[in-house]
Image (cartoon, rainbow, N blue to C red; front, side):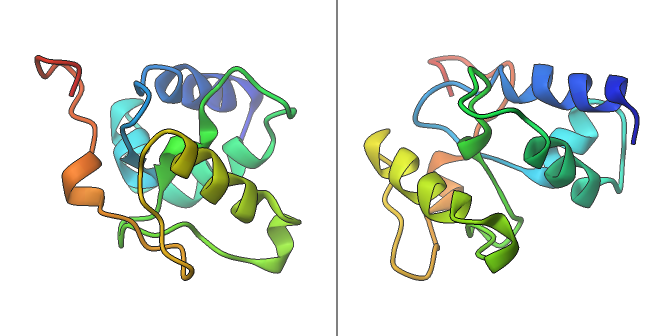
Length: 110
């Protein structure tokens, strides 16, 4: 994907408030890139860290952190960052997506 795709992803993710989650597919849909959830994940991996973009708030559709050796520890960093925001994450990377899912445009910050 090109740089503009990455920037669109980063701009969409920057809108997710603290203590809320979105899925890769939700971000893809938000930028008009239906079916590009995997590409959203790659765009987030290309973010230079540390970053102002709250990449940790994006999880997979099953409500889990995508654990992988290829992430070089960013999966565990993501877990710690989410816990620090008050989102519970178990040892397998599962979290209560339904409870913490972000709905753009919803009232009360949710």
